[in-house]
Image (cartoon, rainbow, N blue to C red; front, side):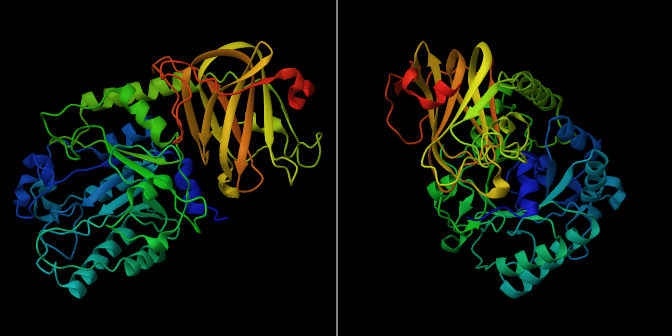
Length: 481
C-alpha cells in the first residue's frame, strides 16, 4: 500500500490551513479581476500581515496560504517579470512586499507559509503563447520559492479563460517546485501531493481514501465522486484537501457576512473529520486587516472545539482487544496505546485474523454523541469498514457504522449513555492498526440521525441507530472484560 512522504505527513498533521485571497479584487468588489485594473487601486491603509498570522496561529491553523497572484495577474510581491505588481502601486510608496511581510509574520508565529500562483493571467501579454508563458510562469515561481524561505504548500489549479489557447506544462512546474522546495506539498486537482476534494463546500465523501490513482486524472478534468472518495486500491498517496470560504465568495465584499462558528464546526467534521485537510479562506478587507466579525467567528470556532475535545470520556478507560501482536502482555502494540493522543503509538492485532475488536470500559456510565478514531497513516490506510457498539443491559447495540478512518475520523450520532463500548473492524486491507479512540460530548450540534456510507437507513431518521444486537454472554471479548 502507498504511504505518505515526510512532507505529506506533516501537512496532514496540521489539519487546517488559512487561505488568504487579497489583491485588487478586494478594492473593486469583484471575484475575477479583468487584469486591467489600475495598480493604484491597491492601497490598503493598514495592512498588517502580523494580524493575519496571529489569527491563524490562535485559531489552530498550521499554515497561511496566500494568493500571491490571482487570475488578474497582479503580483503581491515585486516581481522582476512584470510591471503589474505592488511595485507600481501607491502602497508603501511602491516598496512593499506582501509575500515578504507574510513570510516573516508566519515564522514569528511558528506556523508555515503556502503560496498560490494562478496559472491563468489575464494581464500578461504573452498568455496564449505556450512556450513564452510557461517560461514566464516558471520564472515567477522561481522568484517565490527562492526569496522567502521554506514554503510548505504550493496551491495550484487549472484555471483558464478568455479565448486564447493555452497549455500549462504541469510536469515541468512540479519538477521545478520540488527542486526548489524539498519539503513542499503541491496541491492540484490531481496532486501530485494533495488533491482537490471536488467541491468548494468544504466537505469530503463519507468514504475517503488517501490512496488515489493520479494516472487516470487530469488537472481541470476531475471526476468529482472519485476525487471525493479516493481509491482503496490507489497506487499513489494523494490525500484530499477541502477548500471553503468563511464568506460568500473568495474575496472580501462589504455586503457579505461570515458563516457562524457552528457552521464552521460542521465543516470541520466533514473535512478534517473525514480524513482531509481543511483550508478555510478568510479574506482581509480593503484596509488590509481581517475584519472583526470574522475574527470573532474564528475565536468562537476555536473555543467550541476546545470545549468539545478537552473532555475525552475514554481518556482513563480500561481497554482490551480480541488479540495483541506479540501476545497480551506486549506493551509495544497494547490496546491502551489507543488512548494516547497522536498517531505514533497504536494497537496492533495478531497477524492473520479475520475480525478485530477492541473493548472500552469508561469506568462509569457516560453520555456522549461523538467518537474520534485515528489510524497511524505512516503505516498506510487500512480500515475498510467498522462499527461501534454500546452495551445496553445484556445486549450490544450498534450506534454507528462507517467506512474508512485514515488520519482522523469524527463520527456524530444522537446522544447515548453507556459505560462499555466496542469497536469492531469488519473489513481491512491489511491488519488494522488503531492509533486513537476518543469519546466526546458535543453540546453545540443537534444530531437527529447517523450518517451512513452509502447504505440504506435501518430506522427512521429521528431515531438512534441500533442495527445489530448480540448477547454479551456469548461474546468472547465481553467475557474477557
